[in-house]
Image (cartoon, rainbow, N blue to C red; front, top):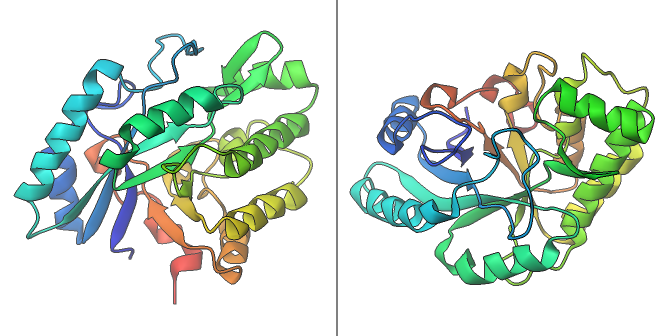
Amino acid sequence: MPFRDGHIHSPYCPHGSRDSFYQYIERAITLGYKEISFMEHAPLPKGFTDPVPDQDSGMNPDDLEKYLSELSDLKKQYKRDLIIHTGLEVDFIEGFEAQTTDFLNRYGHELDDSILSVHFLKNEDGYVCMDFDPDAFKTLIDTHGTIDHVHSLYYKTVLSSIEANLGQYKPQRIGHITLANKFRKLYPPESSHEHEINLILQAIKKNNLELDYNGAGTVKPYCLEVYPPAPVALKAKELGIPLIYGSDAHTASGLHQGADQLIALKP
């Protein structure tokens, strides 16, 4: 089993559970983890309108200082039992690179760890949270013509996130690079998109970045696989890209999800 969970959410997630930090930490210790990273969704960029109904994709900006302070205390409290990293999952949103850079310049020095993820794709009249639900994904299909065009747009945006200049505090791990597969059993793509995924892996390697080896897809009913799946993860391993397991847990019980499917981390 992995000794580290590099992608855990928290009670500060507005679309997660109210499980306390203590519940997450105590479960991690019980499971035998030695190191964890809390990666709460960073506040969304100024000027960006969250397209999901409850506008709860990112942390409330007013809570950010409390989040950082609480984790600082917990790191000291549990230092004998567990290495706890303070982190954020930062959204890469095309067109908001400057605002994201400003945010990272302000708070990046307070982080031990961070992930750069793509959740929002440009649509004809704004943005869509592509992994919010099947209806949101279907909206993208209707706009862009085919399922494969949506996948291509997602992979193009992930590649842009890797190549973007977001300053000295740009996250060094790229989140769930095959998130476009979340609804693959409902809307199966015709193409494997192998070429586009390989371009992403090559860019991650070139920029000396890490890969989020994310177990959340294994519990999504229309996905049931790790992000990225075994062939992609094994290719990343061949390239020497560090794969960091992340449960992407939004509840304490979600810790360790998908850990039994981490083919690329097995001896």
